[in-house]
Length: 178
Image 1 (cartoon, rainbow, N blue to C red):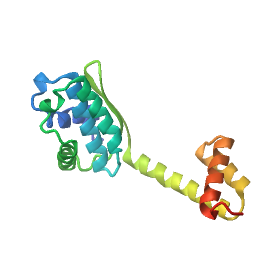
Image 2 (cartoon, rainbow, N blue to C red):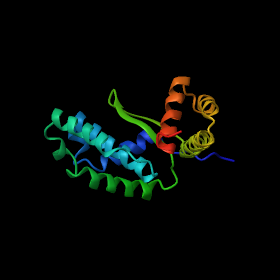
Image 3 (cartoon, rainbow, N blue to C red):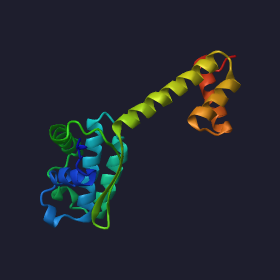
Image 4 (tube, one colour):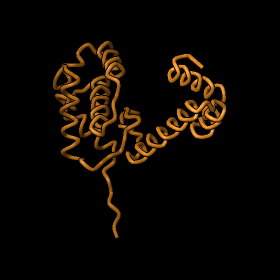
């Protein structure tokens, strides 16, 4: 049996980023980074992962400060429209690829991508939700110390961090009473 080989994510990101630039041959470093950022955001959004708009807009604003002609290098000046276009391309070309991108940058002129398997991310979220749910149940039952121990054991929190979270939960759940 032959294992299916997936295309390197760095190659895919480069391919997608190139679809939103006017000319890959006359692209500044800021333009290349902006295109990669948009491809990164679009990829993860197409998987249901949300990137804070304020975060990537800050990066784009900094890129524009460094290169005032940034938007003339791209196929539009509306990041949301470019992201929507890239999302459509991701869904068309790579519908089954569910890798979640953690990092996508240029290093020494080459695209570098770090990622997680999407199934691993979903499983981690499910587990974290379950751990928090159990912590809430313990707080509701008045078992604060057990909730603290549970959060330390399952979420890897330090005792003081877990205690702070339990106090916040207690205040939220009980409105500061009890």
